[in-house]
Structure formats: C-alpha cells, structure tokens
Image 1 (spheres, rainbow, N blue to C red):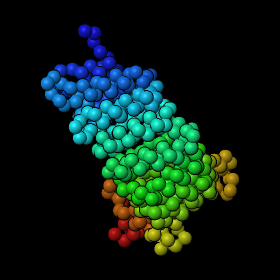
Image 2: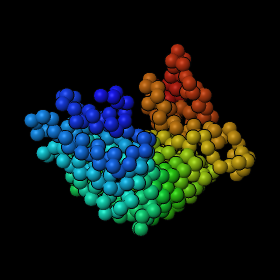
Image 3: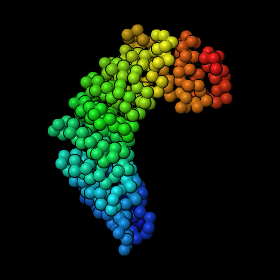
Image 4: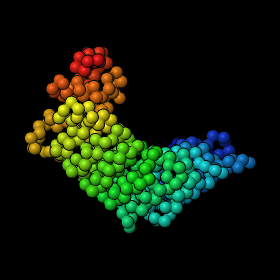
Length: 367
C-alpha cells in the first residue's frame, strides 16, 4: 500500500475508513484544488462505520477546514448531509471553514445545506464563508445572510465568529445584516468580519446602530471598504454608548485625518476632564498606520500628529499588553494632565523600565 501524504484528501479518507480506533478530530485540506467529487468522497468517509459499531467515524470531528478549493454548492451539500448523519443526535463540529470556494453556486442547495449544518451541529461556533461571492447572487446576498442568522438563532444561537469578508456584499446586504442583528438581538456572536465588501456610508450607518445598541459583538472588522470620513464619524458617535466592542478595524477605508479625529474624540476626548473619563475605554481602533492624507500638512495635520492619533486609537489595549498598568481611565487622565500625549513610554517597553513608568503615572493620578 503506497504511503499517503499527510494533509491530502486521500490521507483523511484513509483515516476515516480505517479499522483503527483513532478517527481524526481535525480535518484541514486547504488550497488543494478539491472538486465536488473529492468533497462527496470525503462526506462518504465521514459516514463510515467502524466494524460492528454503529458509531460514525466522523462523529467526533470538531474542525473541518476546506478553504481555497473548487467546491460548489453540490459538494458543500454533501458535506453538510454527512455532518447531519454522523451521529444519532448531534455532531461535535465546532469550526467549519469553507472560505474561497463556490458554495453558493446553487442558492437552494446552499440554503438547504445551511439548514442541515445548523440543525445537526449545535456546537458550531466558528463559520467562515469568505470569498464565496455571496453578494453576486440575485438579491445581493440579503436573503442568504438572513437565512444564516435565522438558522443560527433557531438552532440555539451558538455561533461566535462569522467571516463574510470578500463577498461583494455592498451597502444593501450590510444594512440587511445589521437590521437582522438588531431584531434577533444576537447573544453569542462575538466576531464579525465584513472586510473587502464595498461597504459605504449607508452600510456604516446601519452597522453603527448595532454598535450603539451595545450588542455583545467584541470584534468588528471592516478593512478595505469605502466608509470614508462620514462612515468613521458615524461609528465614532456610536462608540459613545458602547462598552463591549474591543476591536474596530478600519484600515484602508479612504479615511482622512478628519475621520481619525472623530474616532480619537470617542476614545480620548480631552475637551474636559469629565469628557475624558466618560470616553470609550474598551475599544481599540486599528488603521495599520494608513491615512489617505497624501500631503501630511493637508487639513492642518502633520505626519507626527497622524502617527500620534493612530497610537491614541489603540490606548485602550495597553493594559492587555502590560498587565501591571493602572486602569485605562487613570492612564488617560495622567496623559491629559501631562499636557502632551506621548506613547513612546509604552512602545516596545522593557519590563525593567516598567516601575519608572508606573511611578510617573502614579504621580499624576495620585495612586
């Protein structure tokens, strides 16, 4: 018998159909040009029984990653049918990554596959459907997105992360998604990735309402869209009533120093000490150091000021990286009283210098 290469579809099919009592709990077959036929063969292997046992070999599978292949809705349906049939009651599956395939080539097959998936896998926490061109379906992906969220809630609402990036969703789908999130009041969803989706100001306005509602969402990724300064200002306003969001990623959104200033005021409003204390102390806003002001004196902002703002937007994350620091509100007061915000004390800080920094903060805060 020829030796099988680890990580190939043949390797995992062999493991699943073996008589040995060690079926895989993780299957990772990414970027290997798998076709529907390969997916169907893998699905059949998931349903395989061991000897006289009625237990399916795929019943203990917790992670299935088939990212970057050529699987259409036909192969996806076969996989979800297998997930639905691996156990008498429920599947152990917690993570499914079907990113960068073509699983919505047939909308009816995709919808039925999602129904089977959520019905059979109540432990499913992480779903990745990036790069499947959901937004290019007849209705711009609105119904499919609504179907995903509705099925998740109907089957217990366990989904924690949802990746819909690079799906051509645009504003209409983003609005539909945001409205569905508001209506369903999703309790479990913690991470939502909507990057690379041509979302503009209208979509940002709808998502800002979700943020303002203080939903349980902790990570919102919106990189490579078209939010602009208006979208940044809407999200900045929403952050004033939110204390659950931990990460807001806005890199490459045609945002200038105007939008950055609005966001800065949301997390570090120095107009008064009261405003400073009531600023948002939970979210860290990431730009990857990118701002579309080509001339750094444009709009009266120097390169150094932009760099300072970019760092201020991350101030809420400081205690996570340096556990010995005082609470964020106290840090902000210390920096404000010092008159000039200077992050150099915290960049690549050596632990041996930490007592010195803490003494400085303590001197300004009073404990």
